[in-house]
Image 1 (cartoon, rainbow, N blue to C red):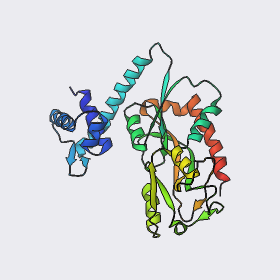
Image 2 (cartoon, helix red, strand yellow):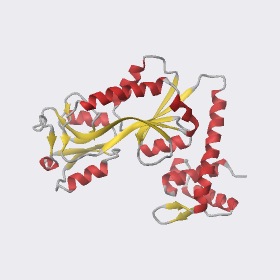
Image 3 (cartoon, rainbow, N blue to C red):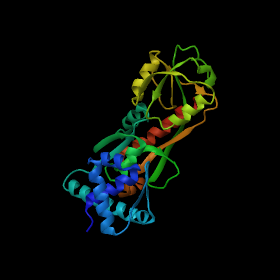
Image 4 (tube, rainbow, N blue to C red):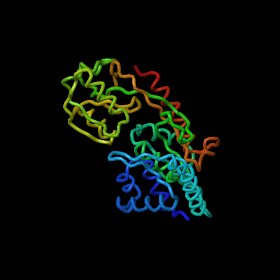
Length: 296
């Protein structure tokens, strides 16, 4: 009989790509996780991973085992959810990508206009939310979609590009399009959680722009306030707005992203039904598309 903890260790290694991050995710020491994986391999009589100094990769046997492991873990989660929900109102756990504009989330919820019921919101990065979905820790996630994988059932809500964020009294604030070369002497701020961070860095570097960075944060609302007070400039998805901040485009920077709802395997039925939270996101997306369409 396979112990559940061994399945959780195995899936954590698959999702994180190495043993140290996997151990942190399941809250055990790395040697403990390694021993658990070794015991699982011994019980199955096969090697599940090819181990290298930088990353671990599934063996063919590990790949075959993966689908079974996810199915078993999802059944565990579904059973636990059913027991918890017995005799109580249905709960929905919603993951929120930490780079989505707060205004969109707030506006979507306000537009719902009806009781949400018992809803728990969990913020995280794209990878964290994917892990939560896989383990049944959240039921749906408002996150990046259309990334080329088919791990989860997805519904695209809207698409947006990236633009500069400048103080409204910045010398370039009235420009609709600004080349990176014009920003060589600017002080900038880094959004550490930005999924387009490497592309943004490459865009500037290829044009000989190596700015001084005054601030680094994963809090977009704080970044916007820093921009508004004139500390520096940054690059953000178009949906982010704030008083005292203008959003001109950057010449030649055409990266885009899709935002949508990803459904956990145990909650795929929600894609075909109406739920106040999902309906709110859908309604909010219509407003976002109108707003983005009128931007330069």
